[in-house]
Image (cartoon, rainbow, N blue to C red; front, side, top):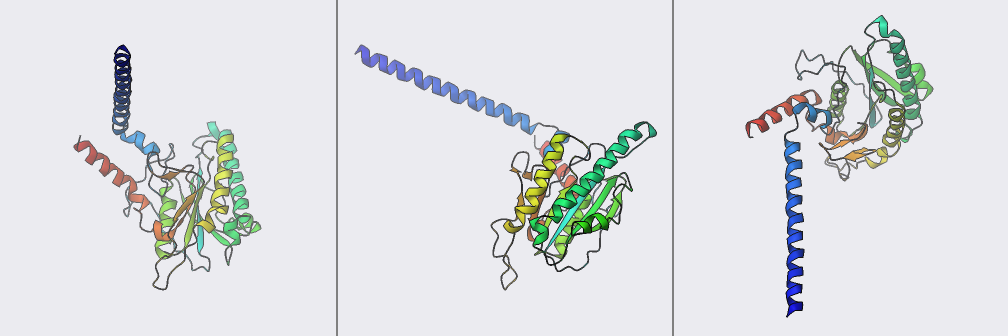
Length: 293
């Protein structure tokens, strides 16, 4: 009888311990979710992104809504035999005064080095080899002007790449280049697009430079074949198992590719919220959430 009593007591203690652990876990989850829900809007903007990877440089001004005075300039894309295009955002920190001229000169030289390095990677990539003509690189420059020559065909053609400078903006964000990319996809819904940027131009660190090389390689060499889609006789895509590709996909804070370099099918990109109004949509959601709590 004593043995049964001890067994019952032991079972009760185990059940109590398990219940306590369960309650503590639930409490911890409640605290975490409450913290996440109450993050400030600015903190969320540091991490959140739509599927086109909008990010912000801290030294540049915010992008306004997609209106006539937004500053955005569209681009007239020429006809091409290729089924893939590459869009490239080059941010060059501005040299605001003579006091930081030496730092500025080092920065602009570094950006030029990044440009040459990435053109070399593009030229040697599977993305370029699989095209009927030279792969076209459409790029915008933002920040300091005349660092990357607008007619940079010497560097590009040396690497068997066709470069087209769309626009220069004194101030701006990656949304401009992303909007150009989406505009292209609406014109060519069965093409594929690649998005790259000069990672490390703002923060020149060894880690950023290494990450840029790795991410650029992944997108240019691993993604093109993954995104090939077969088009049926009625114009619909038969191969729809994968419409985006990148080096590292993360679901935290929103679905995005770490480092913001990726490739995608235009049939997917053309359906997304336009990058220039994405920030406004996020603000509306934040305001709606605030009213409900």
